[in-house]
Length: 132
Image (cartoon, rainbow, N blue to C red; front, side):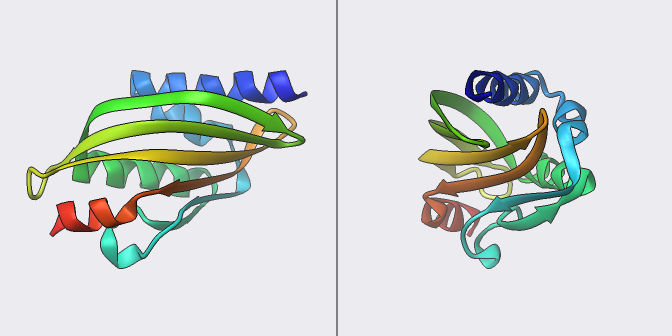
């Protein structure tokens, strides 16, 4: 199952890179919890988003607030129903024009070929500075 879960997560990243957010939202289960760790006051996308609608809203917030200049998932590791992905990204905040770049860790929970959970850990202090 580990290789299948990694392939599933890679397909979600491919959908993101194509701008196909509907595919990601459709992959989410009704009780999916999509969480970006940090202080919600530092960036509007930080916090918990639930279900397919929450996933869609999350990506809507990202599209409204920032432009991507790089997004690179680099390493994929599977353990049970979890897929851990290390990568980096770079953005420009639309409101301020300030750049942000950070290493990140994404943790996906996969059940029966569907997205059950997502967590993101990154340098949210850079986002807070760039939003101000």
